[in-house]
Length: 272
Image (cartoon, rainbow, N blue to C red; front, side, top):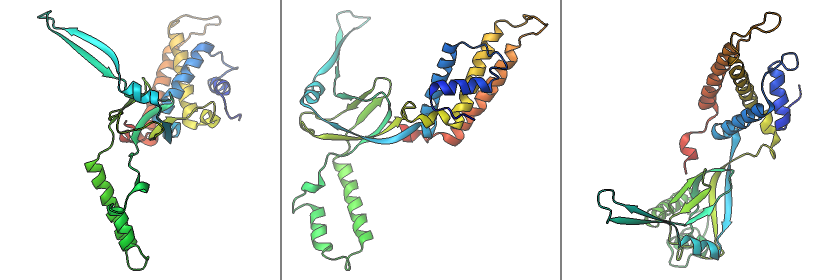
């Protein structure tokens, strides 16, 4: 069996599974391409093997800070009951553009620099007084103390609020861009990024993706034949597109239930 490692070989694999060249599969090449794209999109959206956790690093520029402190749009709204009353709304440009492959942003790592702590910092004193050797202090207890201090930092300082939507590819960071960040600083973002099948070609050989694409093409085949329902071909053969369509729809429903139960990540992992 030839393993599909590209979109073209996946197309031929699916058509052979439907009977080609023994059976004439009545689907146009563009329709097949559309169904494969649909299958790849569904695979990246719901299958845990379609995405990867990735840490992206972005260096802030002077242009970013200038843009983030400006306004993007001006919208004037007039009261429908009293045309003399208007309101003007402004939208901040406090965002950075994100790659189109990023599906969600989970967090931005805190900006605090623990390497530059001074002698009056609590962590510095803990290390100085408690860890002069590793025999008199419980490392487990020490680790728990540091975790509580990190939690206290989180409560008092807080994380920078972020907003992200994969369709506009903008990561909004709601902070004081004039004082909280400087030119040359790095933003470290924890993200979920979908795999590019043209780079990681083994995606095309995924067993779920192959089954799903076969049924999508089969449903398209049935949808095409439904338009000729009841038409008798040469030799007395009658096209039954309705049956092909219903069979494929049942298989698609089963596969989508399977991916939700077995392959989908918990929803909160992809929030951002």
